[in-house]
Image: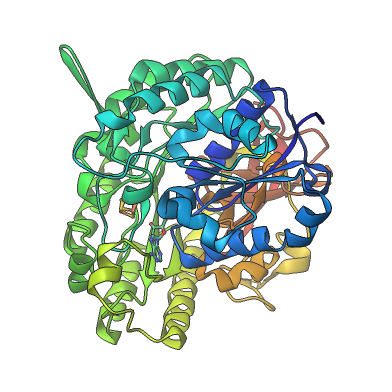
Length: 522
Ligand code: 5AD
Ligand code: SF4
């Protein structure tokens, strides 16, 4: 039989990107070659996202577009993996008959078996248990298999020397709009020993920055005889990894924010001052229907608690606009929260009703699309305006930057993309504030960000091999991140990817700080 040549396309969030690296590892271990070009692959794996309809539609339409190729190459294997697999199960075949195998996120360890079956001409499917009474024990065996793969595998370290490590799986928050609890199962925390071992192995292979992942990661809890671990404990343990330079964690739920975790920003030196804590809305009535479990005032109080412990923390948020029943007044309340919180960055999504969620069952999707688009734009503009103002404070400052890779010009090029006024304010002539021109074509996704790195949670499709390395050629312009996760662009010599450098900020836009390099190794 022809040797395996696999291409992996991932949609959606950071968890999916991590699953993509796992899939890559697993298939390599099974003797496959992972290729960049889908045209040269004989197995195409689609790591799907179900959070919004758009991501799902894209995956299905990309699969549908393979009809002609599949007729030409009957041996071509197509796998639909991830959240959409669990969401629809065997119904996937009704919508996408070209699919040969279906694999839920928790069953990734079965991937090579599924590929083998498909190559033998048999359709196959591996699903997680449906959410029911037997959980989370029902996930014990598959989690243990995945844990073993995660700890041992994934040792290909990209040039940016950043890695994601799962601290938790699943979610129990049941926000009314969200499919994640249905498709990724109940909340389970990995043992501190497994997380720490994985981090150590990654650092041994050159990783400098680790981001711990969990849907509501500040609910991390691991009970051992005589000791209960929370996220602050885990951060402290992981921060002790020799050779690690930076530690982050995403995403935090406001309801689970504690003073103890807030003080970790002050007390754990490696912990980056960056908190992604989605507010989703500033209206109490909407928050209630979203089942978020806090009011806008409580959200503000959690932010104040963090800022009191560590004033330098950059707070980032997600928002959903056009949630059912969101009135003009509700939306005003969101704008008001944004004005008060002064977020460093934010992602804005248009509400998308998802099958199987409480919101889809109970509340009609009654905000007209045009109004969703308008609110989306207005909120992004406000976030951009505030970030642009606050970023001015960085001008003249010296900062440490971990270089992620070449800046994919001209989208972040000071000269080509933005014009700077004498007062330092940045005008974006062709594009509204906060918009990354390169990703314009994704604007229809019902999502946008002003964080400068859409891929954080939203990049609709990524070719696995180019993760974190946008723009393959080393140019004179580099892109990196400050500890507070602000994007910095600067000119420098070749070979800086993965290095920590010192820069001085010269100009600042809503997303990007433009800097000059003055020390290239620390
Ligand atoms: N519609 C729109 N946005 C959603 N999100 C989650 N579910 C939906 C939905 N049904 C957003 C939330 C979450 C982010 C990952 O995606 O803002 O924080
Ligand atoms: Fe979805 Fe809410 Fe869980 Fe986040 S916390 S994954 S929005 S249910």
